[in-house]
Length: 168
Image 1 (cartoon, helix red, strand yellow):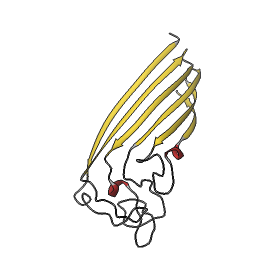
Image 2 (cartoon, one colour):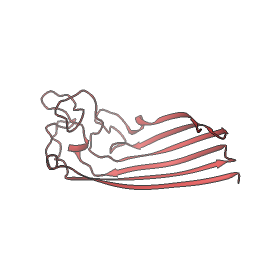
Image 3 (spheres, helix red, strand yellow):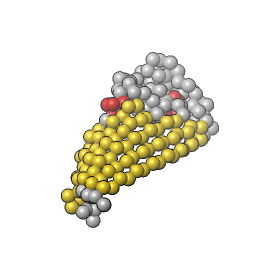
Image 4 (cartoon, one colour):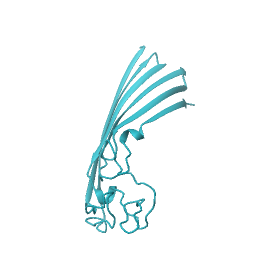
């Protein structure tokens, strides 16, 4: 058959219970506006949805379109970066005791991320595939714009990936 169509669907749920030492604790740092962050949750839940459809012609030429979405519990104390109110530096890890200048990347505490992936590929011989893949984000870490409090937008994470796949 010269035409092949495949579809993939995946849905996953994960639940994390935080140790008593982290649950309900108020972080020692503040958000980008200087406001204290909310206490951490005792439990966080995430849901991941992935959809993908692929069309292949004569087992040589193909394209695929995919959609992905992560939704979950917002937890500013566990998922957000913060500022040390004394030094004004950004914490590298919400649970770290020492501040860093590295941006952690989440101002809202939300894990919500959404986007799509498009791919074209060519299989010139049976064990070689050459392709180009583009991934675009419409939401990242809970926001479309300024998701980290430093002006970064979800689309700043878009990527173009060229590859050569060799099966032996």
